[in-house]
Image (tube, rainbow over all chains, first blue to last red; front, side, top):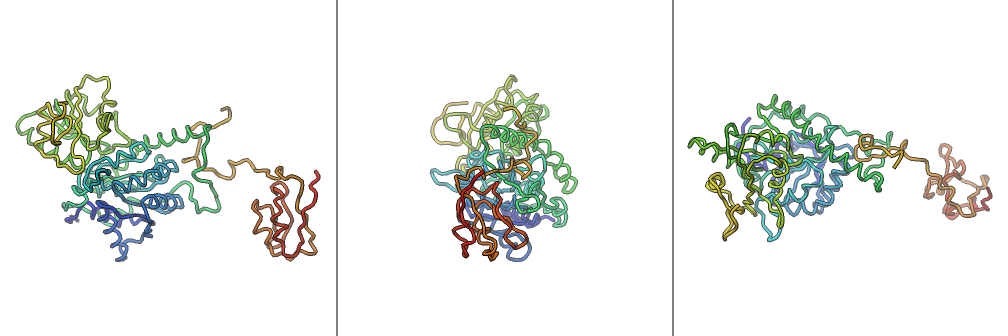
Amino acid sequence: MIELLTGGEAVAHAMRQIDPDVVPVYPITPQTPIIQGFAKFVADGRAHAELVDVESEHSAMSAAIGSALAGARTITATSSQGLALMAEVVYIAASMRAPIVMALGNRALSGPINIHCDHSDAMLIRDSGVVQLFAENAQEAYDLMVIAPRLAEHPDVLLPVLVCLDGFTITHSAEPVSLLADEDVARFVGPYEIPHSLLDTARPTTQGPFAMPDYYYELRTQQAMALEAALAVLPELASEFERLSGRHYGALEAYRLEGANHAVVALGSSAGTAKDVVDDLREEEQAVGLLKIASFRPFPAAAVREALACVARISVLDRADSPGGAPPLHAEMAAALFGSDVRLNGHVYGLGGRDLHPEDIRAVLAGPAPDRIGVRGETCPA
Amino acid sequence: MAGLKPWQELPAGGVVSPADVAPLRTGGWRTGLKPAVELQSCVDCLLCWLYCPDSAVLLDGTAFAGFDLDVCKGCEICADVCPVDAIAMVEDVA
């Protein structure tokens, strides 16, 4: 069934169909339409979650850990400052291996205070140990939300999964979205199962124990390995999802990279813009392509190397900055491609909701382009 | 680090189950006094069981059944809360 939905509404529909047990959440732009839509489904009796009106995002994630480990499927959502306030507890959720699903309406971190899209919020918790999937459009946001509980709850993973959707560009823009049947989603996600429930009094456990130097390192290693394992689990789930939906997902998407000598690399909705530009340039017989990274954490470094093996020149587009160092996607790409003789350039763009126009991507592919795209004032050429 | 487990052998998240834990023998912390009960006076109100911070009061169903001196730290709370003065602290001789 195809409906005209914003990304926020599409995610709310995915949540209705997953029908989680507990949703602790605090409103924040541009995430609010997600919880607003879902709360309406609950009020109308179309979803059955216990909505917890917490007093902050710190409390939202704390409540989510409790409910997820008690044995309740738990989803939350936030943006920007909300994620910043939550960050301390996100690390704990990952270390306690709580399979919480979270929708992140990507929004620039303050300051200056801003409500529009960039990826600085997601990058703030890059090293927390959670899975980070980036959607290109409303359809992908919906589909990734449906896949997310299975990935989070997989016994080899057991980690929080973030589905990142660009604030406003995806959260508030209406697009045709193909929804699965309610019963298909219910069957796909299945019952919630975790190895140790806090409420299982027949098998009592201590969860989140203090770990001294004799065990902290082993537990962090175990957590890192679980995040790596998500790279192996994702294709299994994606092929099961493809049988259901006809739509294919992976840790990355190689778009028209056959014979390409110059490729752009991007996360999120900008990949959609880049596809249009690549199509236009291919019409003009320019050998260009796009590598879209769908899973930023875990980062599919081996698949990236393989996808770009025959590409001579790569331009990485980062919608987040790392002042004083390499921006996050650029750094990741440089590490993945270290030792190859590829020419790699990085460009920051779109901070605080600054538009990235097709002409900007054309300029990157024509090169040389500035290292900060679309900012007023001179910067060094890349 | 001999005898410590590698990361693969730890339960996810370091969850601890009772079987993994060495039994705590906090009775060795007592410093001279232990509780003693005069059973004829005891009315099985179980206030001592409720208040004991170490779960050292043993029950037989809903009846008082003595103290587990392996865990009793001799804090005297049971003797303090007993409404019929059936519990007294006495010298703790090994």
